Image (cartoon, rainbow, N blue to C red; front, side, top):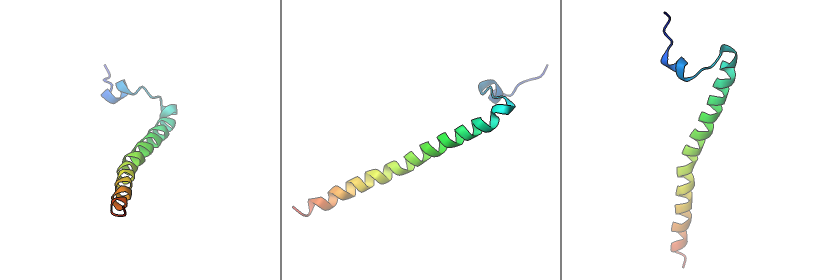
Length: 57
């Protein structure tokens, strides 16, 4: 009796589909990572913009 790996049971990917699946995973990973990197930068620029505006009243 051959035992399947747990990952193979979860991700039922055929060998022919593997390159496309890896490409799709990489794209998703890069998009989500860039959003998580850019989000704090956006918030800090927003706060910095309004902090400079307080002293010029």
